[in-house]
Image (cartoon, rainbow, N blue to C red):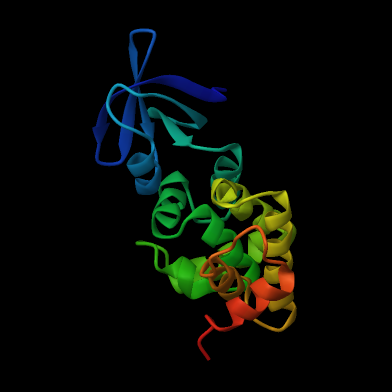
Length: 203
């Protein structure tokens, strides 16, 4: 099992990056978002990888974080979704958005992925809802945004505001979107963030 690959970006193809590792070019399939943000030719990068083994091929799938790879691995446990289907879903909806869509039961968001129908999207929610938690979803999203936040206190206030909106009956995806639309600074507490976020929710 190859846990991760660290190498220099040698080339890009439609759905993969080629990393040069000690003179060997490794083809690693990834989402469009990963390929867009990974870097430029000549940059050294690290991708966490999942090795898919089938009769006629070995395929490496790469992810910028262990948590993103975990979401991919959860998706391929769903009956009818292989690695290609999982990658299709993650191309249509980011791992962060997917967590909230699953927890909110938002099958329409998942069904936007090419090749994923309403029944399959519903199966994803049914199979994975109990394997995710709102707390983990908040933490994952906030960790991705940590560079834009002033401190850990801001993280807590933001998470509490999202939880408060969810308690008020808004879906996790609606709550997250509303709070993310607020320009947060170090002086804002949960109540201020919550009031500002409510103004961004369309009824």
